[in-house]
Length: 68
Image (cartoon, rainbow, N blue to C red; front, side):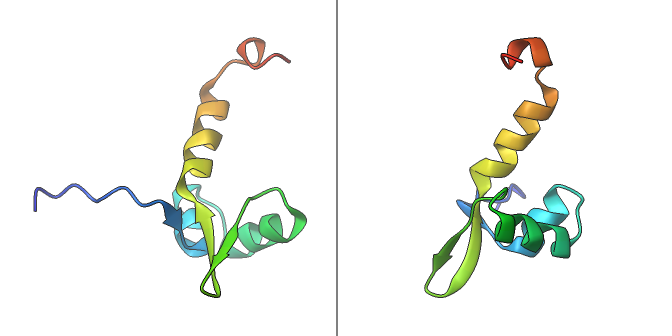
């Protein structure tokens, strides 16, 4: 193995919280209010990994490019 972590399709809520430097309780709150998309897979709550990527891209894109 070359040390690179495989790209995950879904993140656990705690993994997502760590990725965005937020508390797990804030992530669960976002899931509950619909601001963080999630799916249940075999009863397990998961967040699409692409959502974290999209958040980062939006944060780094100037507002003028976002259509605001």
